[in-house]
View 1 (cartoon, helix red, strand yellow):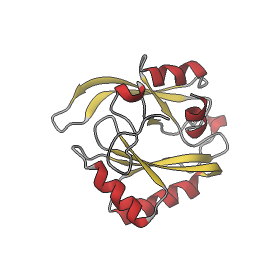
View 2 (view 1 turned 30 degrees about the vertical axis):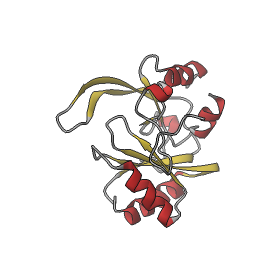
View 3 (view 1 turned 120 degrees about the vertical axis):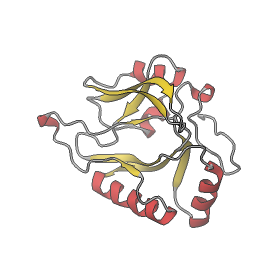
View 4 (view 1 turned 180 degrees about the vertical axis):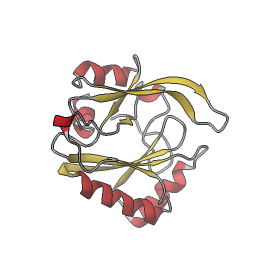
Length: 181
């Protein structure tokens, strides 16, 4: 859990939660998403990985307007993840593809150290355009939040809710599911 928590480190004073509803005709998972203005606790991380309670959403932009990760959110359903992974490898992009809760793709960029949210956002926009997904949502959505004003930013539902029992996992180069390890 500690490694997962470190990889997806973000805003510590608020988090998102998603309670599943029905699946729409287009395949999109419906539900209720909301921000909780409380500290992100170890219990939340553990429960997410165990699949207990609502899924955890982390806001990638922290209190200093920096990020260690960002995401291109591709909302296409019945998506061919393997083709996207192949294209990313062809281009030698340092991206990780995960299935989203609706079957689309969350394409992650991770950094060792924090970088400015604007740098993360610009880099992801360039990758999205090159990959043919110029209109995809980019997280962080904000390049700046004013914590003292109550800003929180937008959250992204994390992969590995209920570890490998769920459908949100990373895709290996051969198209198979990557374990959390």
